[in-house]
Amino acid sequence: MICVILAHPYPSRSRANRILAEALRQTPSLELRSLYDLYPDFDIDVAAEQGALERARMVVWMHPVFWYSVPSLLKHWFDRVLLPGWAFGEDGAALRGKACLWVATTGGDEHAYSEHGVHGRSFADFVAPLQQTARFCGMQWQPPFIVHGAGRLDDESLQRQAQGLLRRIEPWVERQMQGVAGELRP
Amino acid sequence: MICVILAHPYPSRSRANRILAEALRQTPSLELRSLYDLYPDFDIDVAAEQGALERARMVVWMHPVFWYSVPSLLKHWFDRVLLPGWAFGEDGAALRGKACLWVATTGGDEHAYSEHGVHGRSFADFVAPLQQTARFCGMQWQPPFIVHGAGRLDDESLQRQAQGLLRRIEPWVERQMQGVAGELRP
Image 1 (cartoon, rainbow over the protein chains, first blue to last red):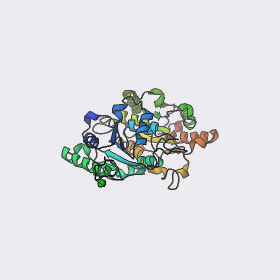
Image 2: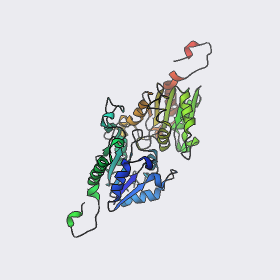
Image 3: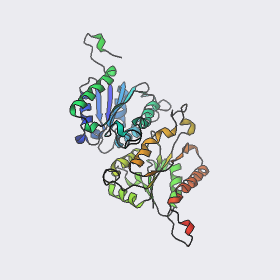
Image 4: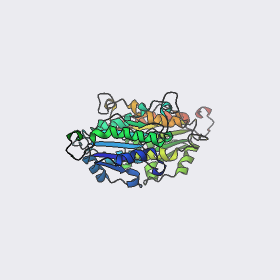
């Protein structure tokens, strides 16, 4: 099971995240949880979220980048769901060993994320809080999947990105046995 | 005018932020806005927040560190208040030139924020998103005021920290003229 936590506050304005999400929805044994649809009032069902995470072998955090970080509802999800005694601390091993993949779209292109670009720094400089959140919960951080300049990519380019994302999660996809042992990946 | 945006979700459990806030409240021409008191339902009054910022020469973001970042309501404040055309972008100059000071308390001590500590990295690695948020709005980023291991400091140590914080904001405090020109700082 792969659990995708999608956080896009304005689905009607989303093209990149929508195309990526549509591709993911075709994947077997993948649960996509759209936080802004589930919790428009920020009233997160902690037990439901923890249950979904416990069923997963891979956790995906997927969202547009707002202010060099996650949208506020996903930050609220971190604050409310990743609790001591469950996600970390004594007896807090619920997420230990699961893979964690960060999927983010940015408005700025790669040059914008450089010393002389409008964002003044490499995008890599903004990874630490997310990466360390995953690691503190004992998850296996995967190389992030970042789509820069998402608003300027045409649908065809976004479809190619979606195929790239599917290849990235493929090792964690659980397929029904169909007599082809090779399809059962670790 | 100094505008302090305080974000502590659990004021009753806060000792460090409470002692720092009490010291700040004694300061003339300082407006302290406690986000979790003002907006327990995350329903931020954007015009009120923008008005408070426009009156300020210094903006202070003050909070305990949650998951290597700001508590979710302060992230929501970034997402909702720092809008294009106001804080950045064409004609977005409302914050330009104002000083910005980040005041954060952490549970972990400084060793925890090191390669071999539980947080795996120097605290400096988590500064980039905040610093670049301020810079993108044209604010003058000040060296952050970070109180590590806040939960383990006794009241006397926290009072000393509060005095240190008051010294840091002093250049932006506007005092009534009392015939002592030296008290009027730039």
